[in-house]
Image 1 (cartoon, rainbow, N blue to C red):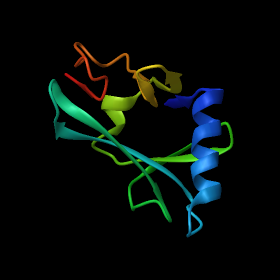
Image 2 (image 1 turned 135 degrees about the vertical axis):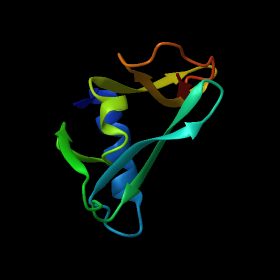
Image 3 (image 1 turned 60 degrees about the vertical axis):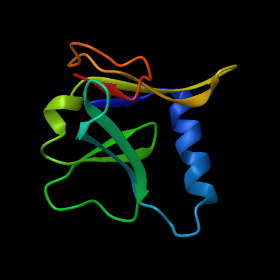
Length: 106
């Protein structure tokens, strides 16, 4: 369903190691909004919610709610370090268009 690149796995594990609480994994979801219609939301969470798909990529647990699952199916998430800044990027085969910010799609 969702794949994290080695760079993304390293970034998430680093965040988990620095977190005060012990997160169980990474929640990834899609919400209405953003420049192109939908926006990606990510955050560390302590437990999955009822109905979440639980996927493991590179040893990191990823939690995806039911509504976001079809919109994120097949997505590869990378963590890029560049002159313009660092951050996660999304290669989503379900996106018909993307915003230039890279954080929203339609």
